[in-house]
Image (cartoon, rainbow, N blue to C red):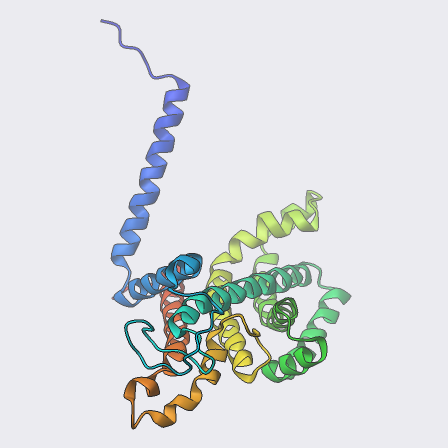
Length: 305
């Protein structure tokens, strides 16, 4: 009986399936080995993502829908009551997840695009470009970012585009510093020098030689910068220059419901209302930090005792 050997195409399919199974098995193994804090952080982040994506279907009422019953107590119709003009707080909490988290993610991505690209260029081209960029970053970092953002938003207006651009540029200075620092350790390697001798361009060296070797610290920094951007947006909204009504935002919700704290001695639930958006901000920040701490420990190469 003649046995037929597998063809090249079948070998490719078998190898691809083996790689897929290996990847998923490794992912499951890493999740099983992860600490409880990291798992908790992943669950919280996943919950926030689901709420942000499906906010129009999860919210019982519209984002800016107004009812003629301001400061309605907690109940069946309005789970967390209403605010000072009669808007359902639960609905605004759900829509606030989409607005606050979505704008924070977009701002962080833009800051990494600006700071990462300039940091790589400065590390590779150690000439006048590095000096000019480094001195500009020093000047921007010398000014408190929150105060600087307040001034710029007061000048250029408080639109969402201005909010994203201003915070992204200010936060890109931190990304520039980190990217430049970690890239300098890679630029001196032999394989980068070999790429230069081959005549490879600056963009090719950045994408193919340097960026893959500095991704772990950049990914960890992305999580940390997201937390700072998220808190900055919430703080600006609390001060009245962030996300503007009628869009829901957790920072502005804290400001709008802050006066209910004084009624806590008469109605405890009413006094807890301002803490709901504040707790949502704190919970997401803690969850992201849990995941970042685990990722940093994982990529550091240190073994658990």
